[in-house]
Image (cartoon, rainbow, N blue to C red; front, top):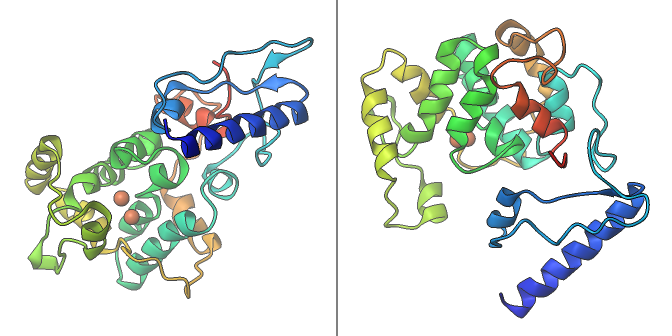
Length: 254
Ligand SMILES: [Fe+2]
Ligand SMILES: [Fe+2]
């Protein structure tokens, strides 16, 4: 580990200690994924139980407070990355609306990168689709899953080329993995191919700082297309509710 990375890690540890203090000795444990993503093959420093210390469980006082029964809009406002990430979703849905896309496609554009801006970047199309699957029309989650692969492949029939941004992001010689190539081949034959393709067409590959789209513009779209569980998102027992609970309380020890 470089000296620089080490001192950054030390500072992160200090900050965590300060946070723990603020949290009346609720110790924040690190998950393996958190550590691996930081290049560390560990689960963080050993847990040091001082007098009265406990592991952090339940609502995390460092994060924005959520209502007892949160809905999708609450997760947008209180958990998704503010600023560019969140605005990317709004700007893409706004473009889809301007392009006269059907309601369902606008909604798919609004949620297409929900994993990137609210959960995890790697394999974001797959995670994002899974998060929303129990609550949306099957076509919407299918399209979000498929956009993970389709965005790498041009479709001249609708004027979609390989994004310049990807050349900048991944380099000239980047080639998608074999599982992406085969997902693309499968998606091409699917009856909902064009819905997923329209996510790519309306995906804004460059963030426009001059456009400020408001979430309120899509409240109706969400109302028509997202089946909100009455218990609150995460309090229900759907196959995806654990993902919303984890997003609500990401520092839970178990
Ligand atoms: Fe995406
Ligand atoms: Fe996107």
